[in-house]
Length: 222
Image 1: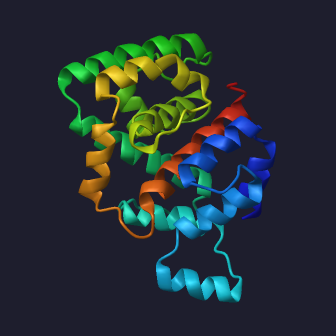
Image 2: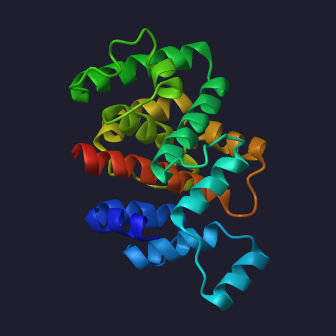
Image 3: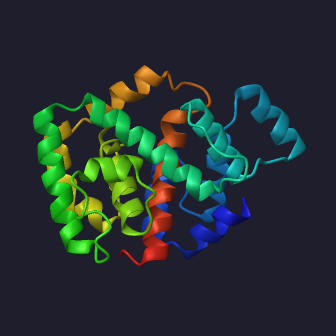
């Protein structure tokens, strides 16, 4: 878990608090978040065994397990950060499948507005469809940040979390109007995927959050 702890050590208290809220961690400390992430990733019997043995799986293994649950193919040597992006792209693609053409048009317009403000490298604005770029391209920097914060934004209604991401803050009112304040699209998505145990309803949003946080800290998107 050292790689994740290093990332969380660089995060602000506000950043950690939102992740703690997603995971229902007891407090927004690095250790409490890591422990809760581990608990959320474990089946009951395995959790009890690992607790006795004091044997926590690596963050890489947790992310790989979540990717497998979503039927995502990952290479043997793919990093946790690469799998984070694949998971986020898969969730975003499924959300798009549930949106109406009008909802997609409104979201596309808002994404373009946000990209025009923050995407200094022009990674997304040159694409004929930001949706295609976000869900199929090899993303980096702001592309990952926008993908993860937007995807997570569609799930906040069922998580009850306020996100500390500037891209999400810019789009939050539009997201609420497009998908509904209760996040019915996200709720339906989790039901369709049968995300029961381990606690994927918390684990997958947490991984997407970490994906956005990593891009924020490494890319300087305050």
